[in-house]
Image 1 (cartoon, rainbow, N blue to C red):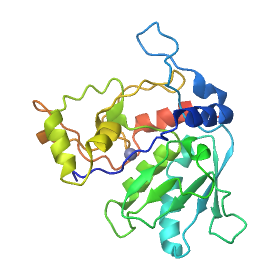
Image 2 (image 1 turned 90 degrees about the vertical axis):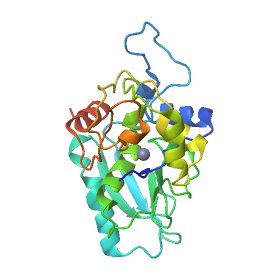
Image 3 (image 1 turned 180 degrees about the horizontal axis):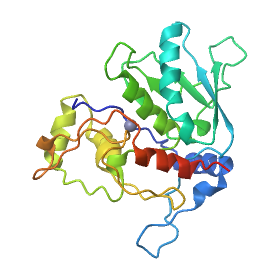
Length: 248
Ligand SMILES: [Zn+2]
């Protein structure tokens, strides 16, 4: 249970990322830092899709079995009641009319799991997969990993990187722990240790139960501090998505 679930991906090109976010949804620009008078934080913006839109979700693999595809759809649909978005699943294979048409483009042809955050998928070229789901349905980790990855596709970042998380990391042990699973210092900094500032329209309190939180073993924190494996969309996850994609 201690392995990293995914490597969160932000586009390296911050300008392209920002432009895609604002073009999709101008509210993505509204940033304030809780408890601070600072209203604008340069470089901090959210990446939510336009509220109420249809999100086309394309499957790009030629050899994806129907049961595998249906298992992914079932996991994605766990989020559906909490967002004001329509999910349209399309055939995104090369040579089909849906090729390159998915807002989110899924491949399973990998051993890794990672997803571009929300509208970063728009800033990418339309032929490249934006959600890489290497975990297979036979794996006990499948359902919660698929839900976690799609949370990123909806614009959610990692909960353990919440500005109020204040996790007492034992930093050398964190690097050591993830190095054993093949993760670089840069990956650990980006996906585990770095904290981000929140968007005022979507800010919710830190949530140890979030599906977007990695497990935190006691061995990599200072003192007695840990988070177990979260396998369900939490109440605060639901509240977060309802705030990001309000109905009516
Ligand atoms: Zn993640």
